[in-house]
Image (cartoon, rainbow over all chains, first blue to last red):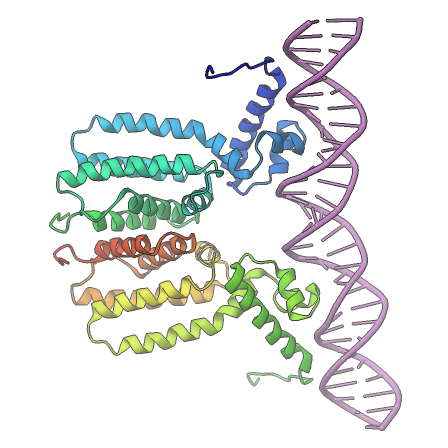
Amino acid sequence: MSAKEQQGRKPRADVQRNRATLLDAAQRHFLRDGVGTSLEAVAKEAGVGPGTLYRHFPTREALLSAVLQSRTEELVTRRADIAGIDDASTALTQWLRAMEDYLSAYNGLPEPLMAATRAQDPDNPLTVPCDELIATTGEYVRAAQRTGYVRPSVTGYHLFLAACSVAWIKGTGATGESVDRLRALVAHGYREPDDRT
Amino acid sequence: MSAKEQQGRKPRADVQRNRATLLDAAQRHFLRDGVGTSLEAVAKEAGVGPGTLYRHFPTREALLSAVLQSRTEELVTRRADIAGIDDASTALTQWLRAMEDYLSAYNGLPEPLMAATRAQDPDNPLTVPCDELIATTGEYVRAAQRTGYVRPSVTGYHLFLAACSVAWIKGTGATGESVDRLRALVAHGYREPDDRT
DNA sequence: ATTTAACCGGAGGGTGCCTCCGATTTACCG
DNA sequence: CGGTAAATCGGAGGCACCCTCCGGTTAAAT
């Protein structure tokens, strides 16, 4: 009945070592070649066979989710920093920016996240972090709405989509100037109309 | 010196027939499976070998560009309809909506278009339609700016990016409601701030 | 040292991309 | 209408990647 039941046998040492090596190699490949990188290349660089990779991470999404976990925690940390800000509008803006950076970490990251969002597939390991991001965005949105900064009809999901859009555009190699402008466009859009800038 | 030089020999009949059959099969596959569909499957459905397909269309972009051509002309037609509208703001809105529909015709279409936009690769057959779309958008934008409807800093390229974003989001399977809202967000963004809605 | 369960890793089947080149078809010409 | 040559066809084949399966190996427990 305990949380761990009987764990029977101590887990083997090589399991954890291989897992860590794989995550490390995967992160490098995702950074360099985007989330569509060859998984066989990842396995080779980690010095294991393809079978080992697929046993540890049955799908590309599982591997991506595991690699993302550390970044997700980092994002939550940044969230704590933001929470200190009393101006709800600034807090929302900074959160959106932080989320956009998170979504731009690897080229092609928005696609699988959107796919996980679409179908509420509980087997997709990316559903959990997505829902967290959306829920957190919703908190910031509601806080900013209470101060009259954001239109009432806007939800966390909407701004999550907007952040995905901007991150996706960034990943396609558009100029930094035009990405800035698109972000500004969106920002003007969710604000209350009487807020001049 | 004439435009056609000497054409030497009349082009073979099977060439044009195969080309038409390939375009037809490709359009159906793009509609059903998106622009990433298997080109071998297209060739098989057209009843030709892979070699024939690749001789007619050396790259996926070439095939896509050829399939897109009819839709591009249709878009220009719609543009003529829009041109009759004297209200520049309505004209811009309708043009953006038409372009968004065009970009959503096949799943995954925005990616290769953005790739063609990024690097001004004259070999990429998608560069031409992209530049046309951007230039036309610019015309509508400038017209709307003269009536004070749109912020002066906005350009056709910016709104082309915005349309690509919305089309991409649409292709990921987000709910229609949220796509509508994202579009509204963008619309609120490019308008002059004193324009209340 | 032996047992045994878990894990490793590569061979292998499947799919898709793209490129050749021998066979075929078509237009041209006498 | 038949012959000729050029252009085209189409599939075989090399390459890369995905994913699975199973005999051999390793590490924990006794």
